[in-house]
Length: 97
Image 1 (cartoon, rainbow, N blue to C red):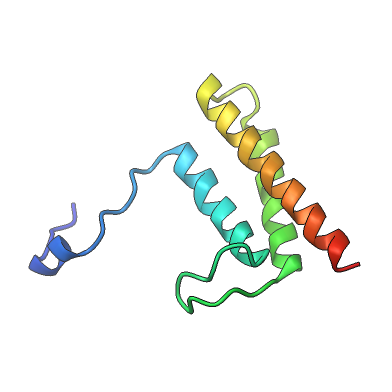
Image 2 (image 1 turned 30 degrees about the horizontal axis):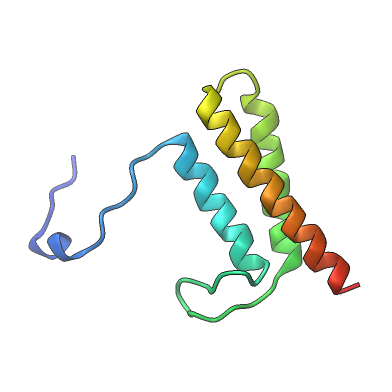
């Protein structure tokens, strides 16, 4: 077990480990790589389409490997996020030619 220090009280709580939070964390990385949301560290928006594509591919692998093992809610959430980031990736890639 980890002990909480006095400084921990002022820090934001880490999200509960869950499948949905894992998907959300990876999707946030895609949104950042697409330049949709700013980088949480630099606060700047930058595009890196190869990184976005690689993370989307990882999410596709995760979808294949978890097929049949998710709750209805988890599967619905996952498929909605995945289709959204794929659509946004395609639009951005097509805009850039």
